[in-house]
Image 1 (cartoon, rainbow, N blue to C red):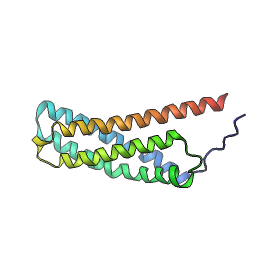
Image 2 (cartoon, one colour):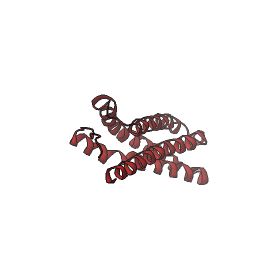
Image 3 (cartoon, one colour):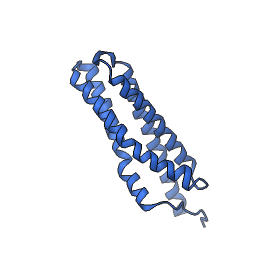
Image 4 (cartoon, rainbow, N blue to C red):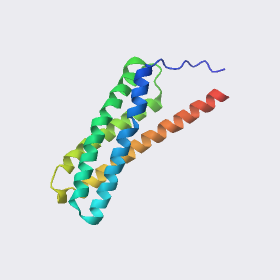
Length: 147
């Protein structure tokens, strides 16, 4: 029998986190695609589009990080798992990379390559690893409940 007590978290905070957490990933992946298209075509529109996507992704990414900060580090410190903490740090590093990427994209269009592309790749990779860690964690947790 599993005697582990589930963390007591706010339903509203979980709903906000679940709703807003995947949105920045889509913006950052789209920005990476726009950066790749810009490298291939040199159309300035793709660079400006990527810059806007990064900014929108950053604006929305901050809200779930604050919710995650409260859930993992403040309210349920003793029940937070390593996967939750690793996901938090990976997402935070991705946000920092995206902030640097926003500054790179604010330059002249020809000065964005290759730094903007590498920062977009780094952001998407960090977010992807965080999603994979949480998916593996949730899968393992479901298996342990069914045993």
